[in-house]
Amino acid sequence: MEKLGRKLRIGPTDNTSYERTPRENLRIIPPAARDSFLPYSRVQPGIRLGENDLTRLAPDLPRADGDAIEMSGQILDDTGQPLRHALVEIWNANKYGKYAHDLDGYSAPLDPNFIGLGRMLTDEEGRYKFWTIDPGCYLARPDINRWRPKHIHLSIRGGASRLITQMYFKDAEHNDTDPMRIVMGDDFHLNIGKQYETPNIDVERGYKFDIVIRGKDSTFFE
Amino acid sequence: MVKNNMNDTINPTNRLPLTNEDTVGPYYPICYDHDDRMDLTKSIVGQQFEPKGDKIILRGRYIDKNGDGAHGALIEFWQANAQGVFRTEDTESSPEIDPHFDGYTRYRTVTGDFELKTIKSGTQLGRAPNITLTLFSDGISRLVTQVFFENEISNETDPVLMSLPQDKRDKLIARLVGEDDDNIPIYDIEIILAGEGETPFFDDFLALGWRD
Ligand SMILES: [Fe+2]
Image 1: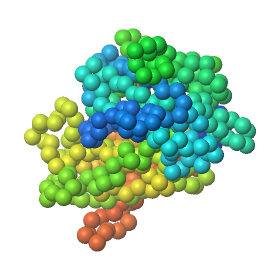
Image 2: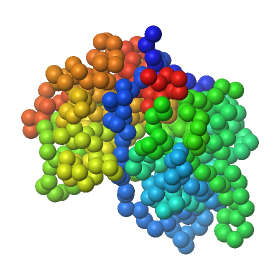
Image 3: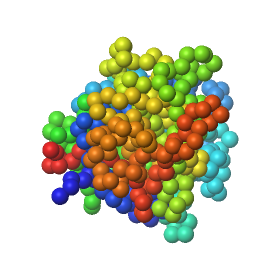
């Protein structure tokens, strides 16, 4: 019988997932073609000072509404090597659960002091640190009253490693009904930020979110 | 509770558990996108250098189960240069690397359509010219496939195409549909994400126990 790869799961109650998830199993990549499936990104945009502080639009402008939080962590590949100088982009909803993105039609208010986009490069140890606003949840499926729990989006690109994911919060409202949380199953804990105290800095609290991404030596498991 | 797809398939020894991939959602910051890089034939905008190789245009669209475009998705393109060599950390200084060709870009599509101006990659190690396309989208985490070009002799022996049944091979071959004002050939591909006529996608996590 022909060997096949994984069958992707459709996120429950997620219409887009229903429309876009392949119904057939993924295909196995022949060994001779594996290298061609390992994109290598050299993208390094010019980043302005302060792009990792989303809580104000400029140093002397007012803070956005809601709790200022720190999100920080280290990015490793699965052999434990730090991902140095990788581009980390984050985006999240404001305190009211509203994105400033053109396509967000949700009725919650915009916050004039919050754009909700940040980016930076990781340091020599693969570390990153952002200040942002504790995001609100938002109603994703009004017809069945299904909400998205609060979360922060991340995209990471550096060399042969890249990942698009979301950080969630422990025991947050609506976590249990979130389609992707259900798909993640027991591994959901890997996507939860661990809360820490921040007594000496100007934020309410911090969340440590360490990230493990496949590197160039670890894409194919044999 | 159902286990995660990703860590399920991984050799449990000596590896840190991977952070789960998640959907990109509908609100990837448009300003972080590099639309100008949908032309890989200009390595530096405003400069005269060009990569070696035959220029081509790859036009295509991602279609969902209902026949609608996969609007708002991110598409990543990755290919070898005219000599068939990929530009990576390991090959950066190799004489086979074309300093004016990068081979990587990411694009946010508004409608599901895309148009990439590039060069046709060379054949090396038995591979036919191809471009690896990765889709990040709302509703799914990541989908990977490879696109080939009509009328290439090397298609007949390419290991990726050969690994598929005949009717699936055709889904990955872009058709020559014309040329632009500069006589650059235009290839066209329709990528069907789900349902009837579904395009084959590939698993870049190999399951333990499924190894050769
Ligand atoms: Fe979101």
